[in-house]
Length: 181
Image (cartoon, rainbow, N blue to C red):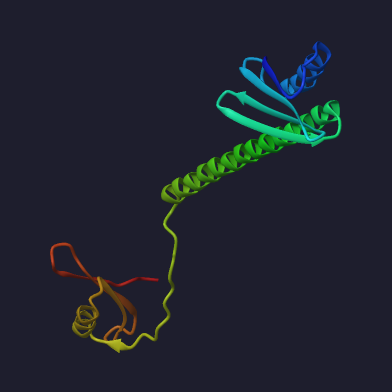
């Protein structure tokens, strides 16, 4: 971790520099060791207030905290607490995003599996019709089928008094189904 400590209206002693670097260095535990972290620490005294400003640069992420207190050491402690809070919030946000992305990916996988299963599964009956069967002759049943623009028509054959089906064949002619029991 690289530190750059600068002061304004204050002499930075070795003890103050060491304390600031040690405290700010504790944020290292939140990141991977291969992450390059640079910390810019600004210590300032203005009208009796001790102001500490820390900017962290971590692999493209910039975190910034500022604290104003009556004591420089307390200001350093306060700014580190703020930075740790920001880091935890950021890590939680990343964790939640990853979890949400995983859920979305799993959901998409489940949906695609469902659609594949639906495509592979047997055809389903999606509609049921009930109607009264009227006795009629075969020619009348064919005419009724053509008027309805259907490919088949179920009727009660007036001659045999049995349920029959007339249907349109691929060659344009008609067929008759007469079930036997």
